[in-house]
Amino acid sequence: MIEKLMMLKEIKIGPSVYKINYDEKIEIYGCIDYNKLTITISSNTSVEQQKATLLHEVLHAIMDNSGLQTGLTSVDFGIIIVESIVDGIANGLYGMIKENDLNG
Ligand SMILES: [Zn+2]
Image (cartoon, rainbow, N blue to C red):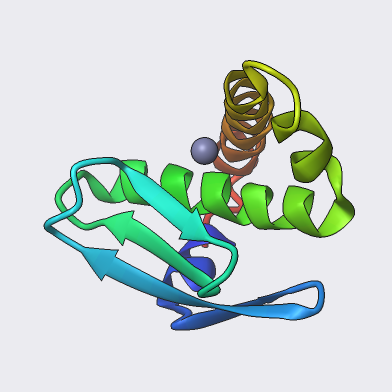
């Protein structure tokens, strides 16, 4: 599942089509731009880290579409809450995918 995800140059999430870029110069694991519709993943980390980061950024897009992201970022420290939720779900999903051999 994630292997296939990593081969995509674009990903459709709800009404949006995000371009997926791998960049060795960014100094964070990854980021998403909701206006430019881009997901950027650092290629300067392990492949395992890149997979987990891609899942993390996809979750941000899903949350943004659902309105959850906007609601949470409007309050003080919202960004920390958003990152905790996204990290928790992304890491849980990633673990489940690995433990059940769904990583193909
Ligand atoms: Zn994040």
